[in-house]
Length: 213
Image (tube, rainbow, N blue to C red):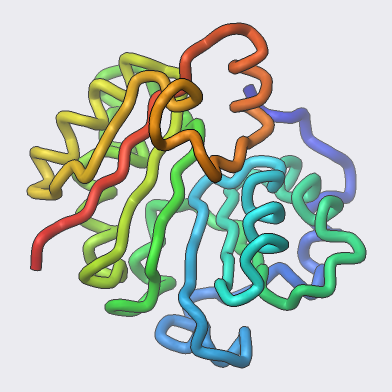
């Protein structure tokens, strides 16, 4: 479920210094914007930003970029960054389908996908962020030893994602159907949706995937 349109959100985003405009012009140059050569981690479909802003605060030697399509959602993430002076987080408002036009080869170290839109109809399968089509996009800019980490409470989407990892020629490093009661729970940073669904008793699924080069 998406937030309703928030009046003035597009204008506020357009003026915000942490939101990068004309993002395709920075392909291969993101280190210039951050002013260092630290690893770059991105979250695609970042929602209200709790996950990414907490990671940025905990890991000052990693640069984070949040990607969100909806202005009404991104504006909430920007509110969470008010007063944050870490200098290691930026945002892009864009559709993820063009993500390979924004990052250059080997430019990104890690990709987070959290509680992505399931696009439940079969004809929309290619739009799912864990489809083989999207893994093909990630392959164009993720470093050789990079990882895609995906979390969801949607079991059909997770089962689909496990299949797509293999179909895309990637390798499942690990996965679990109940993250919070697994060995991967330590250090886990929860999203807003994760907190909500966990409180409802829904188990959280998680996978980590990479590809051999």
